Length: 309
Image 1: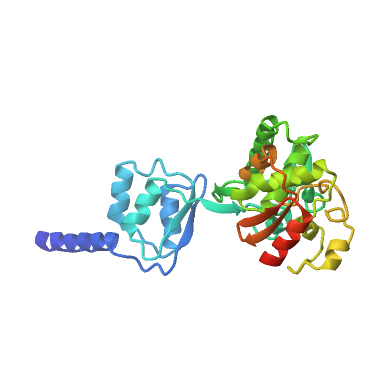
Image 2: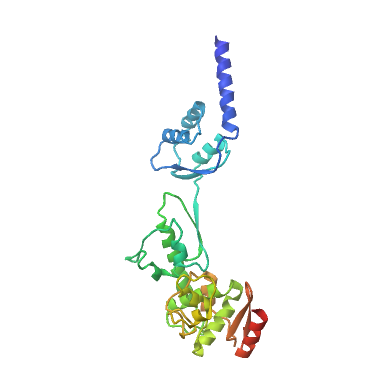
């Protein structure tokens, strides 16, 4: 009888060990949530609901060794066919999974609001922003990839983005060169937002020089991306009637900067706006995605248009 008992125990033990290390039947990746205050037994019970069963002997070892005492609440990424050993190691070691949220360079408030996990309201410096006035924050979100868990308030991501952008704006406003003919930091942000839409980082400073040259001569900036920003339901094809339509963002019909930023500019664009190249170019036309032909006179510019467009 004793031999039979030992044999049965050994078979069950080896079978459990096999289950512990063999690939699971998990069909696809999913997020397993450990809530604040969940006990180890509650976690094991919740794992059962995902068709992950922890053998009794494993639970005994984990609890005897007090490995269940430091488990952190949060999200855990369980991968397709991941074995039980890997799943438990991840949870016991508190290898929580962070979600990513990307604010792209040159993005706008409208493009951000179109994404499902954006909060409907923000409170900044005592002012509440929601769908009715959030466009006043255009340009204030620093483009970057932000990481957060489901336990965190996603609003914190946007507050972090705003604080970062505000810090960069203050930094480069204080470091601006004497050539910068602007009156306040908000204008620097507006100009940077134009650079972000008009050029790649390799030409930010050169395009900034063109804008400052035009501002000094009181010439219209004639920047298409600003015109486009002022067009509702723009379909991607800018036409002559768009350039003639007098909106506040039409830099053909209005001189000076547009009334507010037209995108969320990167640090590269903000730096370039504060430290432009000094040259005599007044015009530029795209040669390819990240390269422009710069001209000093309108006649040269017309020739460049014939050549590259």
